[in-house]
Length: 185
Image 1: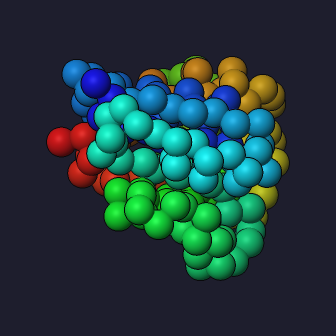
Image 2 (image 1 turned 45 degrees about the vertical axis):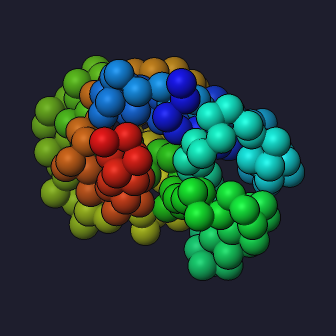
């Protein structure tokens, strides 16, 4: 039986969500529905939520990057697209600003993934620029500069297993984790 359905913009977010959900509640079944970008997500999630039948009362989470937009307007727009009967069991979580901010919020995960040295991670953790990664409008570029490695899927596979479920400095990450724990516990 499915315990949760999470709609995400792309494969890399799907990898992160699936990895984290398995760590939070390995005995629970979480389905992650990946899309080909935010436009695909916006077009299809209302139809998919409306058509969902089994189990009838499954909760939904929509995970969407903010991309330096107006967070409140984005959330309201997504919420209004949810079929009204399913709104009470649907949560919207906004990644501030990009998924890469979640990685930057956990320097120890970057070390454990073999992408940064401990000294570089300490420097990153102590830098005011990275203290609140949700405020970075260019988290993707900042991560590329730090790691010299590309490939969103590769990075998701390397980093997600090491992401701390409590100590990440990204508030949007912590809110997402809290939501998963609440639904899956």
